Image (cartoon, rainbow, N blue to C red; front, top):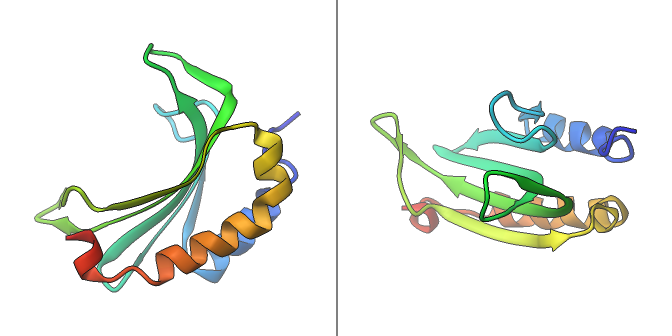
Length: 120
């Protein structure tokens, strides 16, 4: 069973609304994740759903993170620290599945209100 089967359509709709790109299972990254990326007013923004990191080379796919990030690029390099808000950390995926509408609503509020001074 695809972990994301119940929420993929909502992620696609969110990406379409923001003229964003939904990436599924990025090569070289997590075997299972979703990431929505877009740029608005020079600010790069992303909603990331990924398994929690462990202190080992493995990931724990039973625990998940739901993260909002924003950053800018200067001369082709991401300016650190940027901005990040963790909406869920080390949570069961069922919570993401159940609360996806609220998580996307919060993500939209968070990321649409980011200003350049927040990420510099």
